[in-house]
Image (cartoon, rainbow, N blue to C red; front, side, top):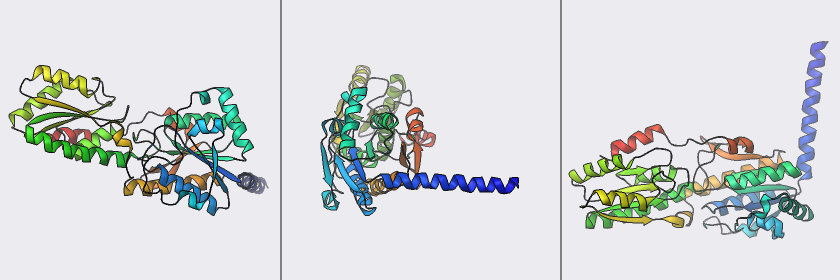
Length: 351
């Protein structure tokens, strides 16, 4: 009898949970979509996928312009299938983005929620990085509004996804720049220091450096003393290399490309040194095929998970599967994305 009761109780619990999920799905009638933080190639393709997936499920969709600032200003626009036509190939974000200090305050979040509720928005899709996710997690907990997050940042620095939107495109942009810089470096026997973005992540620097044949790569995750770099450069000079490229991640410990170049120049009088800061060039441009497909998969999955009753999770690519990770885990776990094999290969191939 106990066994029978146990099975019966299990079925009862499952039925109750199912009813909860059904109720939650039915309660979401209008999905709000926004982008926040730094823009990244692929955001528009993601918006397109999320909008059309929600519409296909019979839900209304509202675009929230300028991220959290748009929530506070009630900068909303109803969207239909045609609202996202001809944007899959565009860089940037049609929904715009903005920093918003007011949203960091309880009063700001209260105003944002009031505007969302007034507009009938009862579920959110957020596309952005860790700052976006932090705001989403707090808002969702304070006002119990369902939120699913999508990783959109060129830095590729979020736990729970092997690749973030825009990273592949940004890396390809850097590689193209390196190829062009090498042409002039070889023509003049010059040493170029190329600084790339990535904040505390060296993903762009490492992958673009290897693909571009850089002689040295300076990363935030790996301590590289000037002495070691100078030894590498001296070896390159002795082997009569016609051009030398050093990739410097903006967050590395020596203070950026200009500081590194200045120190190297003081030690070698035979090097003609030049510095190129690629900067925000890396954020723009048409997204790569990889980013377009990834964006479409993540946008599609985000809406499906939202309508299935999930909240406060990030959808990400793990292997070749789209999986969810709780936002709390995404925000609290340290990211180590750099492969030890890649780091070793970097030194071997630069000889």
